[in-house]
Length: 349
Image 1: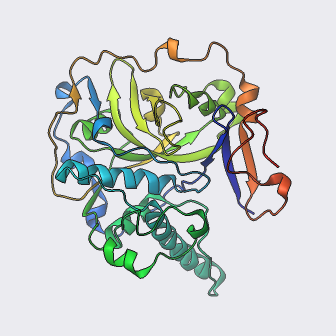
Image 2: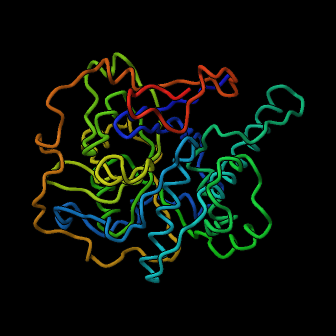
């Protein structure tokens, strides 16, 4: 039985869902959705600015809560940014609409593959088990997305087909193109310098717990690698800093996590092909480059400064912060609550 994995945040009495990303094993079927970003780069290494920061143009960071919708949250944030950049309008799109339709595509593919393997037709239901970035991009191209007010982020509706009105409105909010980005420092930075955030998958280790207060994500240590990867997660890169030697990344665990919902992931981590993968950017309009008003030629802040890091590190506490729950388990002792007791850090009964 599949397991859901959570990261405990005892300081904020919250838990954060992990393993909502399924690694893509295919490219989108539509040629417009699997273009190579390398063919659309407009800056070489020598002309890139020392810092890019798109945060001022981003909509508020949202919280995926206990739902495995990190991919949908990342792409919703990207789409909202594109609309705001192009029109100045701040809209809030339905993450659950994107998440449902992405899983629907993943499910249909799984059914086909299972039928071929077993020589008989079987059906797999839509479950809250995460999705691929590929299917989410295809879903945004085919079904688009509606406003959050039309299909709200309601836990009870996570596996429910959105209403017909949501699909009607979704046809007005389609993406036209998507670009595959190599796990390469120059390509990643160039994408951001051109004004486009990118979604990516990343393997996380227990040390991610330490990013809760300041957003400083550590390069996996030997100890981390021995303990092993405990979760895959999709996030959204919205900038970089030469001084910090890090990417500025938007998470989907709410504004109380990290640096107001953002974190700083070292270049070394982001460009390790064993740890970072499925890197994509999307477009709604045919435009290779936005203005460069998001460039910072001074780059004065070191986001990874030691002053922002804990004085001591307890790796045992890193491990203890991880909670695995069997999906569909009805045992009260194994259920993950919405919140934790603020007094003792233990789960509420």
